Image 1 (spheres, one colour):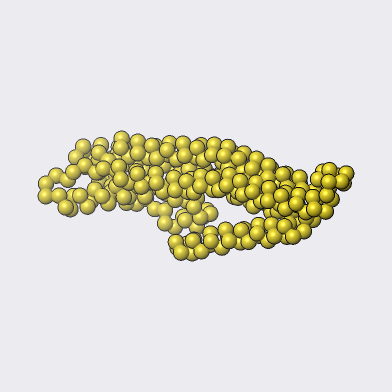
Image 2 (tube, helix red, strand yellow):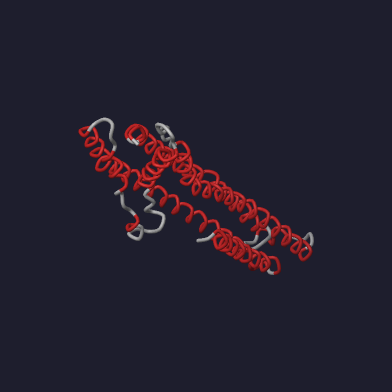
Amino acid sequence: MSGLKSWALWFALIGGAALLVGIAFWLSWIDPRFHGLVERTMYLAMGVIATTLIVNQARVMLMLDRETQRAIDIAQRVVAPAIRADDEAGAATSHHLRRSIEQLHFEGEEDAVPRGMNRHYFARHLKNLLEMSRTRSLKADGPAAAVSQDTLIEILHERLSAENRFIELFSSVLVTLGLIGTILGLMLMMSSLTDVMQAQGAGDGLLQALAATDGPLSGLGVAFMTTLIGAVLGGVVLRVLTAVVERHITDYVAEVAELTDIHVIGRL
């Protein structure tokens, strides 16, 4: 999806959600019988966001597990035998390793699993290192300088962390939605309280009207509950899960860097 389409999609989603909340708030403002509509709308919005983020984090973790296993598999089945063949052929050659990296094939597998699950980061990293080695050899007048993977590793980490930072952003959005729910609930309470006081005056019916199920104090339920849900989901649950995902991203990138530093770079 292009950047413009992605922006338009998110704009439409956010605009639609804001419109629904606005309609629910307007109905609750003009008719106290609809006070529960704002509450249910806020709960629905926060629940959908939290569920989507948790599912997305699970998808990222599944992708990391898949890519880690694939990196280990490539190192054992492809890189290690090629290195042994080069060692047997002579210390000055890396023909078998280069040919093995060239023959790594993954383009045809992309449709086998859902989008985003089959990135082949390690195979792509090896191919990029091989291409860098060739480019340096062509440009060098004398012996080619050693290949450095620092930039590639940094790019890999940024790509993996980008989606996690997106989830972290929406964790803060959940907390903000909780505060918005607090403001809406207090506004509804004050509006309803004014109407009740004008209608009941200072008589005995005032306390009964205030304590009614759909009375002014019901707005406090929206105010406090949305704040609590936003704080628990956005401020605690999703932040902890985001930290776990980030740790596994770091572990995977470190595994890739270690495998290539020890077994590959010195031989290209």
